[in-house]
Amino acid sequence: MQPGIKLENFSKSYHAGEVEVHAVRNISLEIQPGEFVAIMGASGSGKSTMMNTIGCLDRPTSGRYFLDGVDVGGLTRDELADLRNQKIGFVFQGFNLLARTSAFENVELPMLYSRPGVRGREQRERAEKALELVGLGERADHQPSQLSGGQQQRVAIARALVNQPKLLLADEPTGNLDTHTSIEIMGIFQDLNRRGMTVIMVTHELDIARYAMRTVVMRDGRIVTDQPVTGRLDAAEELRKLKQEQQAIQLAP
Image (cartoon, rainbow, N blue to C red; front, side, top):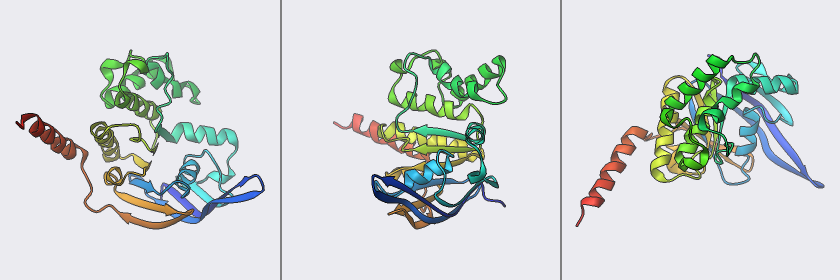
């Protein structure tokens, strides 16, 4: 099977004044379609730089990046934008929702930039389906200020899904959320992954990484470990355990 994502001797350097910063150093990595991968590492490890490249937001300084067999380095800026819009959904720690716009309208937004465009009826149907998928069908008319942090992240996930991408990239998606809501978000990711979507998540939380199938750990711009997750957590089961714990606390004298 052809890997969905393939990095070959990928390096990325930046110039900070007169100093050259080597953010990523000669990485080779393959991710198969339908995998759920967590990328971990301390600040400055290169994980966000690698995520930006996988998301076609940046290009390697050297080496090559293939997405579904396409050499991304040879694409123009417009072609990169089309590729992002057609194949990749993004979820960030900051929800990045438009404040005075309803959840429904926030979810519709990526379709306004689609080429070819999405017609009005299909646009509405896609937005409704995406919100229902994340459990917010009944709150489509609510603005972000009327939603909890977890609900806002669900809207952000629905927005990432509305163009029907093959790849979901999530950068610290639970960083601003409590434990219960974080597990709920991991449940959505696991469900999407079971449906065949490739999910790549940057996180610094060890417990959150255990919901993935595979963990890639970076340090100083290099991959130091790449291994399957042992004792993988199931979000539905963890929510059940958490509910039992909360009930036990409430019943305690």
